[in-house]
Image (cartoon, rainbow, N blue to C red; front, side, top):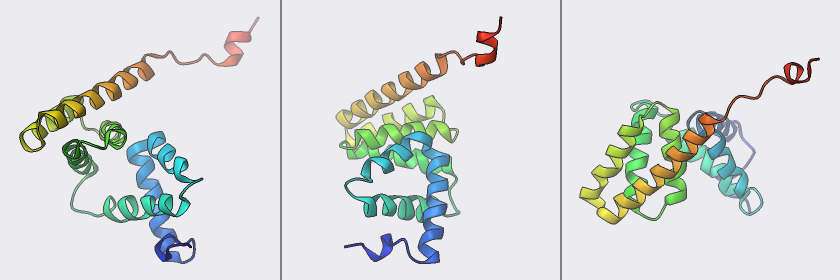
Length: 152
């Protein structure tokens, strides 16, 4: 059974979905799209809700910029202590919207005061993985255009 909010019918839900998908791509890029795609086979309605509510409704509100929102999400997911995959996606999202690595690390360290050292240590481990993957991706040389490589 399809949840009414997840229905593909209705202009309002379609606008929420379109707005949410644009915001998700702006923040999380490929990582966010992969999460949604991974749900398509098991819970497509949940995937749609994941786009419509958090990104179409909450992330699209005025009042906080995306940097502030992503700092808050990194803090919350770190404090939860049981959301490493989501934390990694949002650490990358934070970097994508202009949060610095130092700000990410300081946000995670701040959570040691409120969520304990284990949660902060796990958050720092997640950040280390994201930073390493980001470094590896940026260290790969750009491919030369095929015409230049195959030219006589």
